[in-house]
Length: 247
Image (cartoon, rainbow, N blue to C red; front, side):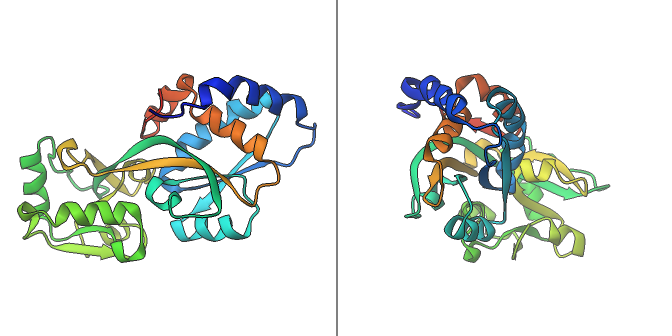
């Protein structure tokens, strides 16, 4: 059961944030990778409108998020749950949602039919190369994709591990298919998105949000996380590629 403590406190915490926030309060700093940024941006504007608290969303790559999280400034961090669970400088970790791995080809190229597991496998086997984040870099998506490609039915797929974004391999021609987090692909005009990896392969990454130890206002950080997990915002998350895990 997710966010159990939030329904009991969310209204109180949000009201407290409204009451105590000074007119010129420093922005709430939220760190997240690109895959979660679209949903956070969509929710930040109405939050600021209702509370008067500005929200700054930053982060970038996993390494950049982790570096800023240690040094600050930061208030809230949203990362793959597996990453957050290993960080001693994040408290109050709450599951937010699940993001699926997507399939893309270079813009202008016909997208393969991946509507069934069989057609998805056939598309990967026919590709010149299948690019994905190098799991050795520690990315959760890379590890999930690598695990999937290690299944016997993908034995003959030509893997192209990439340092950074998988789509860079489409640009340089070393791969004809890229596997990457779906919201990242949807925001990239240089690719054509074929769709999500069939659900039967479990190519998904769970994300959670927590309070950064370096925050100077834990109450405001907690209020924002409560807002992120408000069931009223579930539709916004879905529209931006994240399937909510809260109820």
